[in-house]
Length: 69
Image 1 (cartoon, rainbow, N blue to C red):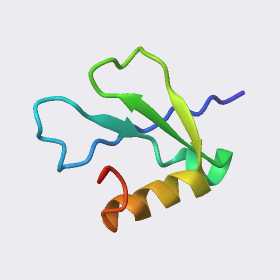
Image 2: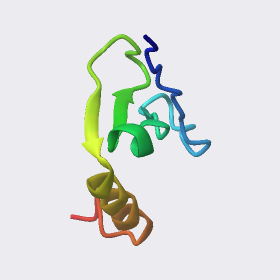
Image 3: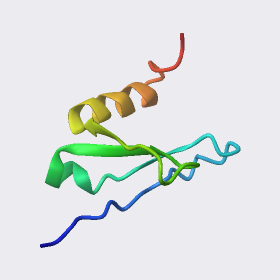
Image 4: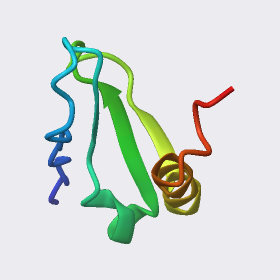
């Protein structure tokens, strides 16, 4: 039995004093989710975001539609 271990990734743009998240995009194809966690709490909870929702979030951020309230 093999257990997949997420390969965590933090953006190179995350140099803002530690308020960062990490994602494990390697689970997108095999599990249909993108795990997300707080980079300051590696043993803390992980949020598994469905790939379609994560893609929409990233597209919204790139188009500056997210976080501009």
